Structures are given as C-alpha cells and as structure tokens.
Length: 120
Image (cartoon, rainbow, N blue to C red; front, side, top):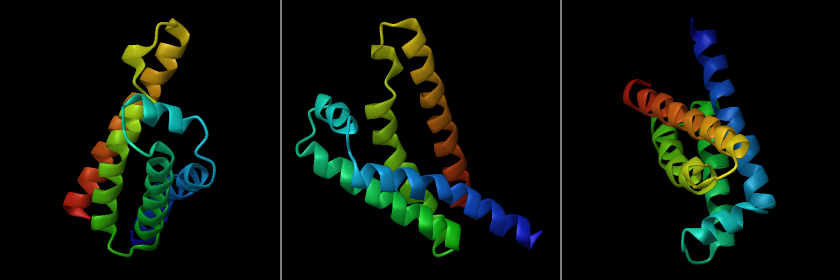
C-alpha cells in the first residue's frame, strides 16, 4: 500500500507543478482576471501564486511536509478559482458551462487537499 500512497501523492502534486510553472513563466490572460478583482500588481500576484503552486506541488509529490503543502495549495486555489472560473459572470451558455466545470473541479481539489492536510 505504501507504493500507492507515493504514486498517488506524486500524481496529486504534478498538475500543480506543471500549471504553476505555466502561470509563473507566462501569466498571460490570468493577469486580466486578477486585475478585474482590483488586486494591485496583478502580474506579480499571478507569478507568485504560480511559484507557490510549484513549491506546494513539488513538496506534496516528494512527501516533504505534505500536509502543510496540501493546506497551502488549498489556500492558493481559492483566489485562483475565484479569479479564473467565475462562471456566474459569463453570459455565453457554453463558456458558462465550461467555467462551471472548472470551478467545481477546483472545489473538489480544495476538498481533497483539505482532507489530505487533515489526515496526511
């Protein structure tokens, strides 16, 4: 069972590392989403959040303070989800539906991360 835990932890952390790197290196349209929330220095915020996701995902995958990493990732997903997947603001039904899927996926990830942070 230990191998399943190691593999699961690595699979759980990997998307945060990959997507966090994307955000840190190329903030792109994420900057406008953060700017729309009225947050100062949106590009810096996007890059910092991406870097935090890389660090948290790598720590989770490697088993270095995994409960703290999971808690930090859960916290980083809350503003990410609000800025990037606010489906309730979309008027196009197709886009609204897609954003709703991403929003609910992130809510599920936050739940899983909190459960991991609580139990390890």
